[in-house]
Amino acid sequence: MPVAAGRPKVSFQAVVIRFRLYLPRIPGLKALCGVSTMPSGSVDISSILDRILDAATDNLRIAKILVQMGLDPNDVTWDAIFNRLLEIFVHNITLANMFAAVGAIFFVATLLMRTMVPLRVANMVGCAFFALFGALSANVSTFLLYLLLLPINAFRLRQMLKLVKKARHAAEGDMSIEWLKPFMAERKYRRGDTLFRLGDPAKEMLLTVTGKFLVKEIGVEIGPGALMGEFGFLTPDNRRTATIECIEDGQVLTITYDRLLEIYFQDPQFGYYFLVLTSQRLLQNIDRLQKQLAAAQAATTNKIA
Image 1 (cartoon, helix red, strand yellow):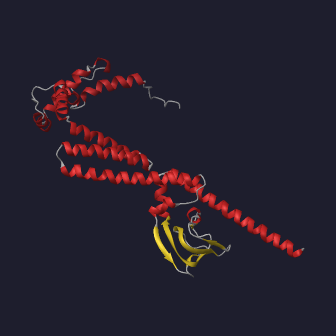
Image 2 (image 1 turned 45 degrees about the horizontal axis):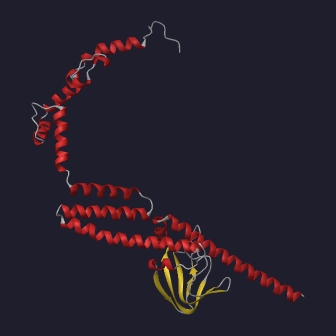
């Protein structure tokens, strides 16, 4: 933009010179920094740190902290502070504290893990170190707490490893889902009972144990060891895709979709194998319907002939 008439141009160098001239006039600036407003190249860093330390020792609270640390506020240096802190650190290093530090590291590691199997392993290692800390420091409550957590984590880890192993077998073609039984609840039905209807909200999956059940829309009977209601878990609105009625008194095992989601997030690999399992079930249903359709077409052709 053009400069207004009568207003002289001010260079950047002139502004810097004026700022340096005005800087020493600021009240308390020298006392606060302990240095003059000389160019930065001539400032001695060590003298600045010494002046800051001298100003800090004049503060009563800081002087009190120095006295508690065993230092003389009237004769203190940075080297003395560092050596004192190092002495305190070395004095407090014990075998028990080292075990506690390692246990804390593993505990923090569990917060950063996304899958359950390595989380359980890290938690078990951390609990072992904390139990050793409690034993060496004669802290009975800490020792008993983390000692009891060890078998709990080991049991849950074994459950998860068994679940993943069974899921792998399911992906390889084994349609049995016996590996889900520990997570399921028992329920009984009588003949004539309707388990759910087409379009109903779906909240759980079922595994038949005894009895017989009928898928009314396609007229297919389901016997023991079959999975029911798994497709409602995969549909966007969680709705039932068929109506199932009990035609012979039987028993089923149920697991809620929330529990399935929990297992999935504990180990996403299980989610992959579960999708493989349900995909195989879907392909089997499609194959059965195709055979029924082919049989119906053949029967119609025979009648016409």
